[in-house]
Length: 126
Image (cartoon, rainbow, N blue to C red):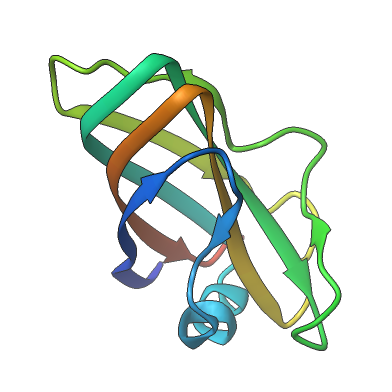
């Protein structure tokens, strides 16, 4: 059953520094058993730009760990000539801690992109 569907990130990312979703969404994303992630990225520049989005979880809002061994969207190539539409799934194989956030990073040489991320949270159906 769908719990929520919400835009959790919208920003123009410049460079390769890691950014995160706002703490406002941490508890809400932590309520669902599974997460479906959609990224819309445009205004892309740079040489061989790519995007990684990884689900992280924690209980205290300060100490975080990757929820899965590999990122849900792992080094996906971004095109400068189209609006990029990427999807990833956190299947809920392991339970989440009470708070969940997304770790977002561009890679490449001088990468830039306007990035919007939407997350749908669902409960596992027995």
